[in-house]
Length: 573
Image (cartoon, rainbow, N blue to C red):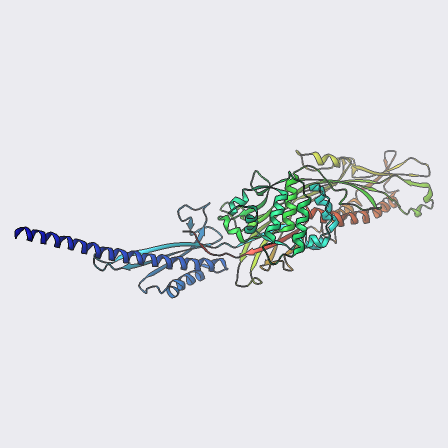
């Protein structure tokens, strides 16, 4: 009997223990369920708040959006507390694990904390439970400094690409204009290359034919790209010889195609780039800094024989990123134009000065006229300073500040020396004898540009200038290309070489037997300048667009907006 009572007590204790465990499991399960529901609420609220921030809303709007989502959208208890904090998610600047800070610019993230006292049914007083979630959304703009569609010439682009790549392309201007309006998503390009992330894409080195082949595949994914553009890309791909390599990511030690300025490079997956911009920049990167023969591209026919070569010191870079600056003031997203050296020698083939003012034009002979010109263009920049996304593409906006680079031009007997000079600043130190004139059997009158005392050529420097441009969010809109002519140089009205000719009018001199006879030969000098002006204007019409195709902006900045990808909020912690 005593043994039976002992067993009963033992069984009762065991049952009681099991009951306590079961009741505890119920309480713990309830606690876990409540914690999971709070986390779901915090995640959705943070996502809603981040989306509001990316759409141009201030922190107050983001806070309201997050709180409304938590309370109304998720049926949160009235006893729960929702705390919303705006800030910046930045793995490169903020400490882990959340990488979130209330400081930093631009604001791109929202952190939501949901807390509530959850009662224990059996095991004691209520316990405070909280869930924290951080979501970020980045507005990504892609843009470049390039040539406007309106300036494209089929022969000009063919000549330049053939010089860069050793090809024999002969596409029409309509073909190149079609490529200039062909947009390719970076995500589609990555898939076509066979990489799984934006980071892998930026770490890729690829042959130029394979890159263009991937562009064909990626462009085919878009319903907005016509069959003709895809066919033209295929034609170009087939013509490019093997062996030309391109780095896709631009780094301090490597000239690459894309400068992606994002804390999370994967946010660039929906960003777009332009087929022609990519093709031209990639061709320059693949060519390297050896000299490019531009004689075919700069053909003036019977007017003049042009000897021209260029050297790319730094190729252009396409920017993909968000607005604002890093803590040290460096812009986050910045496109760069090319840094290029150009040497031209203009030889007039049909020189007719119309010297009837002498009365004896048949007794006046003029030797061939040679004009040696050197041009050096430092790189310009375009920096994304602000983006504002709305529910409509037409009302979404981005602000880009364009800075032209320092440019130098000179005419001189030593102009060619600058082409191989890598140590000192550009300068023509010797006057250039451009022609000589014999009249009535007398000794030749030498005509030169520059000064003999002190010895100097004609030197012209164009200082950088800054202009702010505003773009909307509509792809390939009428405002996708915007130019600013900051120095009255490089436009159709006042071209690069035309500007140089205006300076030359006051720097041209005539000497006879070592003596200056410029005053006596003023009609002759004026006639020479009059002959040169239309020649240089015609050369301008080819040279300026050619330099812009290379990504060079001298006195004029043309920024090409490649698209605005408004932020899709994603949970990051």
